[in-house]
Image 1: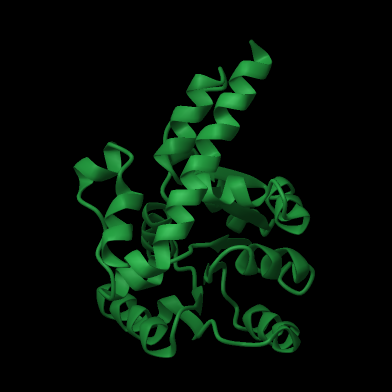
Image 2 (image 1 turned 180 degrees about the vertical axis):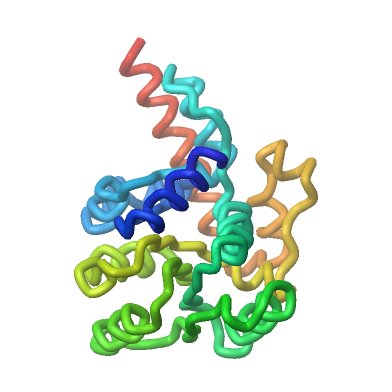
Length: 231
């Protein structure tokens, strides 16, 4: 976390763009077949392990990571950093009422100058260049995109030229829902035990059962297969 924050701060001060992405078990499974997603992830400047399962898998495969860096924790730390260093942020994604509430929460907690702009995550592919240009014109130093994978990764990758003057770009998944209070985050003990996915499943079983049941099982198989191959 500290290394990531330092790299972001340095990039902004030097006006060099950093394209950030987090990976969890589900995303690693998805990029086995999604070539566009795999390309956007592998060509990012910073990749953090958002899921505890990824940290465990890395250790099992002899490539240990220093720690889990959850996307929502990183976003909250970066918003604090933006406030301290007088930077501006742009919020893209979620429903209109959700992203609007997140903007209001941050303005109350910090100040109104923090928000360069915001927009909901419901748009067509034809709208994307215009939205990317809107973000570029906003003067934001940080862009947080709360849209599902692989849409957010592909949006950031496909429009990287239009967004080149935004020093830091990051996909944050469902973080806006948590900040706004729409969904709750798992207790710390469940986060540390790698059960945050299960807590989310309990809140949205109809939407999440397939992602976690199939995705987690496939991820375990991929790790074991890689382990056996190396042995």
